[in-house]
Image 1: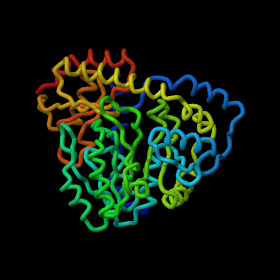
Image 2: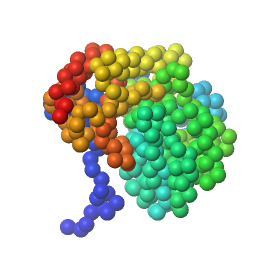
Image 3: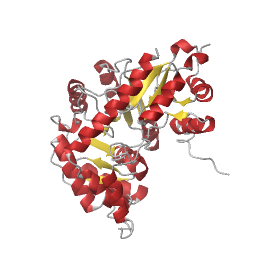
Length: 387
């Protein structure tokens, strides 16, 4: 049998999905894999019901149905203030996972380097490697997860740096980058002539007083920012796999071609139905923020009431818990014991850090009240894991 690919031989399975399997095995409350357990808005599911008998059921235009791209451009213009050409600056993809992969493959040559903030969503390093690039990690320092500009400069000075990946709001740490921080990143990106590939899937899940600032709106950044996002988290449709890339026309032209050969196109009937959601009024997004704020306050407040040390999320729907007091050297072993002995699923923090960090675990709280309350009740028994 011939040898398999060298670039993929270091890959493991997704730790996040692995911990879902562990949760299922032990009947734990699954706070590991970050998907909501509540239904999408009824207007959206009603639209899907209306589409089902009549379609469209065949291929849409490769880079996305016209009405979907127009609705998406209008929605993003409303929130970002940027004028977006639906024909020349948008590619609709099969989720933001494909959006990131298509963006990386469009800008990276073999041997290029990509800067990644650590902690990071586990796909970013793999995306770089699959693109033939080398990931270079810059730490965000707990508990506030700020970056050191000197370390960013040092990373940018490495030969062959082509791009930086910026997840904002951040998975897993819930950081919302301030305008000042983004201005530093923008100034350095321009100075060293690199792309910034942004993952903005949590753009509408931000907790007051924090605000999401679109990096592409900063001076000089429109042409070098490649926005990757999806509808998954905003409308609770992670299984629909509708994502997109927004960028300058010359970048999008290349992304269109990569996307065409990766997946051909996103699902036509789902795009048709999702136009309804893209046309929602501001009241929906205000309701969404209030809903997630309630969930954050319920769960994070409950952790603190039980004396469980944790971060304070500024955005997204994740919280990092410090397990130092429990005496484990292996955070994955802790998560397995937590699922088996306490009945709550989590993700080991080491899967998100390039640095030697094994004292943090990640919970997500995109759950209904009864599920969060059940998890908190079970976590009252977490003390049994102390060694």
